[in-house]
Image (cartoon, rainbow, N blue to C red):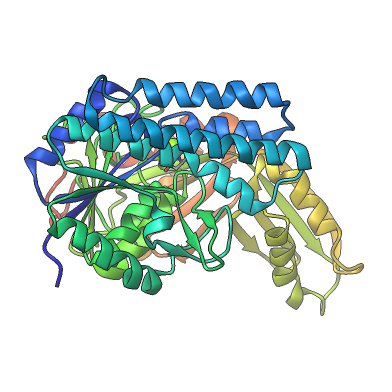
Length: 471
Ligand code: ASP
Ligand code: MG
């Protein structure tokens, strides 16, 4: 049995400026069970790595790009402290390696998914050095670790890897446990691990939350803290709904559905490893550490059937695939799904009828998706229609799928504002309903749903779990 240690993940905005390290240090000092810190890249760094890979680069550009990146991280190291010397050397080493990699890409004019993931991982590698060096300055015995070097094992799906939880537990846990028992705080890179074939594989954008959950799973820790510079989950996006209010608790499924359908508070995949080991995920705001934040755990299920929150994904498109006559249809859904997957298209939602399959895809993946479907064997598809400029709205709550009248209230509220609802999907999850509207109706539709359930005002602190909240 492991001690009740905690893993605390710090997002990009929490590691990007000098004053933030002081905040992290006080979080660690305040609770010495926080022995495992998972860090994201400094904000914007992964984006710049994506950009530099997006088009062929001249040597000059690579040189100045790497020099800038190196400087940015060097500037964040503590000044004139012994602790920083080792980190400075490590940052130099990383910069040199990255430069060589980028040269390789430039010369060969070729980038494999593997090389891409390796390049993208440098943001976290650099950040771990900077964070650990700064924590040492505050008297914390912090040591940077690269997740692929210490045994966080993944499958070989580069760009969207999944951690192999058993292998990871066997390899990662003994090492980290030993570090903690020796009194050290491990500063672990988020976002990637080591693939089966021994290369760096990333978990997809925003994947550091997932890394934290995987570390907790490996060590069977009861708590995963996700620290950001904003609060946790809210009843809706406050940019659209000014009266939206913070949520103190959500179930695993509610959190997963909300994140999948656009809420930015958490990476949707982080729920699975947490749930698998019964760990709670606690979302905290580093600028207001005393606020409780949002807790997601095994005991936060409120099945009252109330809608808890509304989320959305903007800029999607509906692809309608019409089948030719009967007899062909059986295979259609699976063939369309396979075609879209191999074209790398994410399908948010699908609805089928006797003659048509409607699929919701990212607007910028639309032409790719259309091409993939039109290449299906002759005779299967009769025609394809496209409905661009759609947004997906979802409303989420344990039990909404069983509660009479919830959907009716939502659609009446939306219809009362003259908004046309296009594609409705219910029942795929008993926790979430989704529907689509035209992009231009998104704001008004989200406001309508929020007002239907919560009125115009903040209803006060959320009722304790188990008790019914506002009706
Ligand atoms: N740095 C990575 C990204 O920007 C991972 C993360 O931030 O969680 O996607
Ligand atoms: Mg990031």
